[in-house]
Image (cartoon, rainbow, N blue to C red; front, side):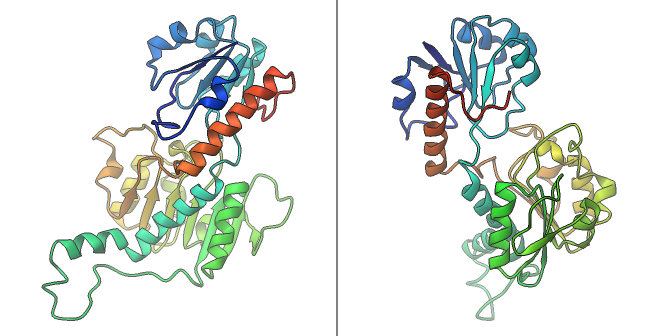
Length: 316
């Protein structure tokens, strides 16, 4: 059984092992694969693993021996799942592996916006505290989270984890999801417009679909409080970046914390790179070593289950 990993570096830059996968077949791991290299590298492989390398309809059609695609992630929009189904190719993902890490990152971004820890650290190292006449100073408003409303768009596993942490900070929880089934721990369901209108913090945790592309746009930003913060650790394309940059520069909202962008890495022309009060991290919410270890372990279990004729975590 030939197994090819097209872009293994971000999951395992060398601090983890591929041993569990290597034991299941003849394994070839590529750090990165350019578009033109996908078919030559994957040709003859029954199982292909991808993280962000796009497996389009044309690519899948050009690989007649392909039987299974394992996505080294939870989101699987990099795979044309309709084409995979048409060609009888099973597609599996890895749910839940990064839930605590992404929830943690949400509050890392939020606390940077509200406490400005990194900013103040930089000013101290620049000598501003040493030159201060008082025992302390603060550069910009410091914001208390207790009593604020946290709006969660997409109340799945990660959204629920974020809600629990928010509640521990004393925040009130509003959650929106496509189905109002079930309960919201420590909070309540709310319509999408209400979440944006009433929340002091809006955190995005919904999948990228045709309906959610540009979910956050100029019109929706205009409904938010001027003191509100937007957090996005889901998918960059949920947000219209030009509209968000304009809203930040105009003071329509108070700030944004982003771990994902529409194009990654971003071009220098991305307006968010120069927007006011915009904290950006390089898509690392998922990337602790513990999470990456779980990612590889679950992927190996997905491959093993497929080989046993009982595929799991199937999305197509």
